[in-house]
Amino acid sequence: MTTINVIMALTVGTLFAAGFYLLLQRSLMRVLLGVVVLGHGTNLLLQIAAGPPGAPPVLGTGIVGAITDPLPQALALTAVVITFALTTFLLALGYRSFVLVGHDEVQDDVEDRRIATQRMPSASLDEDHDHADRDRPSDDDGTDDDEADDDLETAAR
Image (cartoon, rainbow, N blue to C red; front, side, top):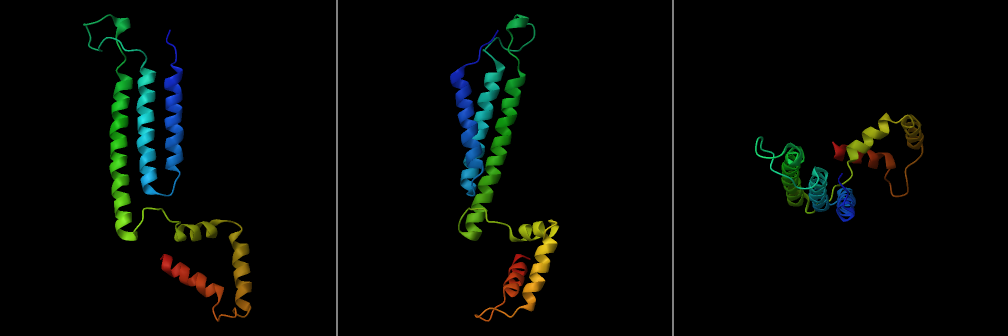
């Protein structure tokens, strides 16, 4: 019977918590660090799941009960490859964002927000409200809010 190492379990929990916290940030570099930390947490979790070390999994060389299961090592290798691929993709995405915009923060997508408001059932109520606003005279500064909304939608396209 194997026992769980509490310190290793707490380390995995801490790595997952820090990874998910960083993954939810707007900066792409923090998201990248979150993916890396999650990858390390996953590898450590897979190594813990493998159990204590044993004999190499080569048939005919060891006692059947003392051979280590090779599946967790294969899964850890897969996790390393996936983490590396995701890291390079996010690094390229952050670099491209920095070159084009000057920072690596993910902005709100105006077009996505517009489509989401059109699909909501309450959008028809907002639309009626917008038509009621058109009947009113414009503000003191000579601009109408609907014109500003139209400009925003045009810029989003």
